[in-house]
Image (cartoon, rainbow, N blue to C red; front, side, top):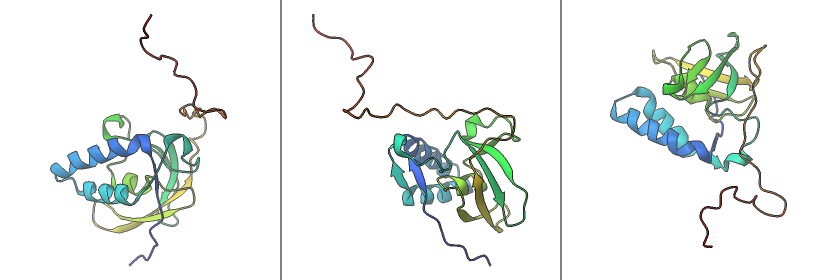
Length: 159
């Protein structure tokens, strides 16, 4: 039996709602990953999206990881199931290893059960895309030092 500590996880505030809705829908369909994902979301520290540390595995970002010690490193983009178009590129957050990687920091290790019920350990190696892939992280605008940035579309005003 593998004895691994459960590491803390971080989820961006902009993702927590859609991930919870996804897991609840999957729970109704008796998806075995749904309960695991919900338990991970329940224990997560939720950060304002602009303040999520740069070393955290997030949806729509690349992650290089190992499944068990000594295994080869795989690099995939963690994605929602509807965005998983190519299994060589995408890793669904509704897969056992995808749910285990969600919210981990680089260097963290997370035990999980695979589709066959065997206990495995996912280890985050890096958040770099595979060689030859250009990837730019798009972040929401940060607050200005003097307060929030002005709204580019303040809406209608009385004239």
